[in-house]
Length: 426
Image (cartoon, rainbow, N blue to C red):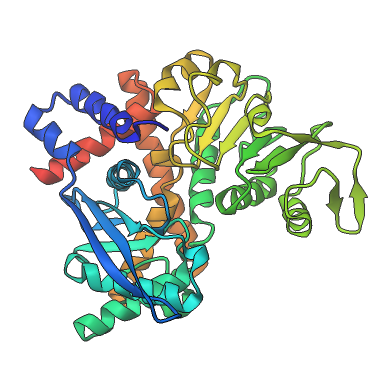
């Protein structure tokens, strides 16, 4: 998405206008507290030294320590990183957890590094930002091309540097090193809770009500990766019918709308290296009732729920008029271009926006931070129950404001978040 930071700032400005905030307050909301750029020296396995650019953007800690991922990526883009740091501050405030926004990483392709080199880079990153990190300052987490193992190394390095064990300095760690149960499915689970809560309070035309709000409802998922797969599993278990699934290589659709089992599709994907139109359920294969479908065509299917779990800007001014789904669950950051929200809602499409729908991930990261600080270990049932409470309350708050003020769901989420941030700033 071109000029993504300016697009997000327009949303902040709209919310600030609704709240009648002074220009000085708007400027504070729109400006990172810190943009830290450094170069670290990475020792390669062949003995040579490689200079790597590393960075961290910290965006508004009025409500608590900065929170956000670290990515190792060769095409680091400051606009994107600033945007994601700002959106993290908004997201934390939407679900009312006491944290701000952060984002960072290293400009490198980790696929071209050995495991030992990745570890050395992870530790060098921590050394570079040691004075800007800590459980009460800035608490990073995994992001693109980083994972629990890298967070374990970073936590270990930070603990060595400060001379004491500090598990709460990073989240997204492995379970053996202080990670939280329920983290892997948290983003999808939070989104499903938001969808189910919406359905409890808003029946769709021609549909019977059910405790899960799922009876007879069809779903298409664009982005059958981690969040998309887990969302598919949760929705399938709840009784929704998955009729189309896709990843970056393309996907399949169910010609008869009988519904697919996401686990079988994932097993087939692993076997073939991509989502395959020959769909197998155990030892019995059906290669007749499923057909290939492109990502673009999937977006235009007449389904009840469209789940966006892939890249940004998938629904935009070019294709928004062809979207036939009744509800869009935006699990991907920026899956919908915000400039199309009004058009979609005018066409009868309900949007469950990313700043609300995918906040389950950061919420469970917050739970991990709390468990580490209190030296506790919660069961998965405890984590899921606490997550549900927060997501349901957050949906209720956003929808009440949307209805009262005649705003889009995204506008309502931004207004609610910025109001909370400004109250903390004051």
